[in-house]
Image (cartoon, rainbow, N blue to C red; front, side, top):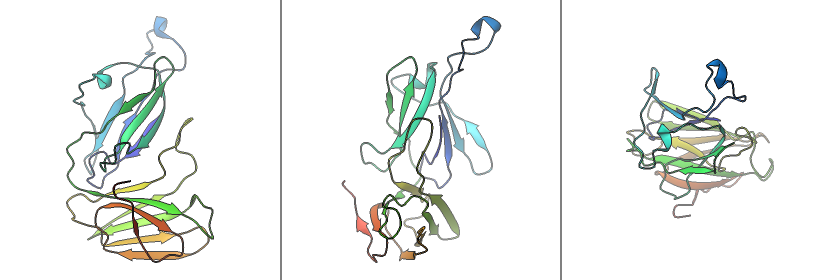
Amino acid sequence: GTKAVDIDCDGWLDLAVTNGHIFDMSQYGEGFKMPPQLLMNLGTRFELTDVLDESDYWTGKYLGRSMASVDYNRDGKIDLLINHLDQPLALLENRTQTSGDCVELELVGTASERDAIGTVVTVESNDDALTSWVTAGDGYLSSDEPYLRFGLGNQSKASTISIRWPSGVQQSFDAPEPGRYLIVEGQDTLHSRSGN
């Protein structure tokens, strides 16, 4: 399982990885259980980082398979659910010191498919433009919470949200504050979901 998620809300997608070999080839010197990895995006490169974690999860070795992202405690930071072949599901709460806030969007189609699959969203903040797509599947035997998240870095708010629905409908919203919003296809209102 691999996820491209903005762990620290700086506007750059980081990589979280869980893995493990599909066969036990340890008698031939091959790795079998493997540690999870977090690679932080520094803008020009990814750097493997050591995760400070009271549970020591990140220093263990596992047969990791599926990974899903969710903001389970509604603090605006992406948490991870990781499933393994040999251990119970792990819920990893993101306590990373963030460099900014984020905008989280839940989309509901009306003319398009209700789950908005195939919708393209671009969030602009000063000179930066971040684009994401609503997808139907997010990884091996898993699906992420149905929110698109955009880290704003050192910007206090996004300047524009542009949406292109599969039906061809296009919408634009100006200057939303950081937070969670529901957007319904064809409606001109950003519905705040903060606190949900």
